Image 1 (cartoon, helix red, strand yellow):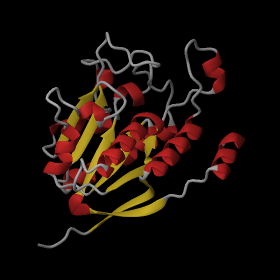
Image 2 (image 1 turned 90 degrees about the horizontal axis):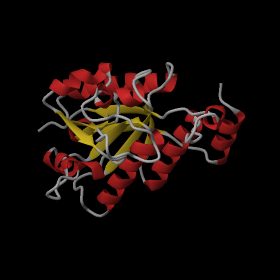
Image 3 (image 1 turned 90 degrees about the vertical axis):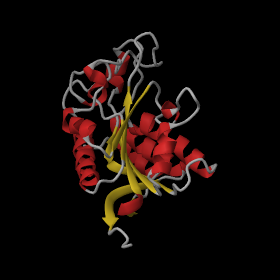
Image 4 (image 1 turned 60 degrees about the vertical axis):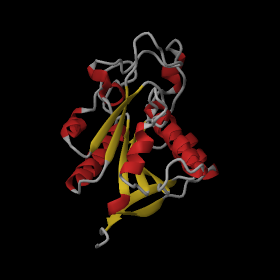
Length: 244
């Protein structure tokens, strides 16, 4: 059941989504933080406390897309939060500590680690774009786009309004500055994204917690991504690869 507040939000800042047809032979899939620490019930401080339908749908849709991309041998990059225990990520409690199962892909996607078309990038910050920067100044994500001549990326993952949005904003800015040639389109698949839920009653009784209504913030995250220039897709399909 959608709350009156969310209904009001959607009426005041309506989000127009579209059915997007992507070019199969030049599209890459980006998986953002689909790890146990954010998705598996009871797995950590930021994991859901009970089964969550939005997160479950996100995993299901992401797995479906991942299998399609692997079947077609198309490039996938997966970002995973992987934090050093002595480097907190404020304002959040310790989560996805490097070397723990929290920082690993959810069971439904763990098989991706053995796929030759998949790049896994562990990061120590919200933003997968910035988190791909190496000590020598190179960037794993930028190199992935250029090596595979990617013209469109399809983005899924968690959290819609935090790590997904941060990555999308940085990527769009980098594209606009010419750092990501030949990338043109950044597509966020709404059913392939999710965020977490901290109702106001829970936040009031939890020291340091910030109120974070799930459906409200999911909508805001998608809206802000569209404001930055992303396409927001309610449906995704792929055209046939071009014949040589």
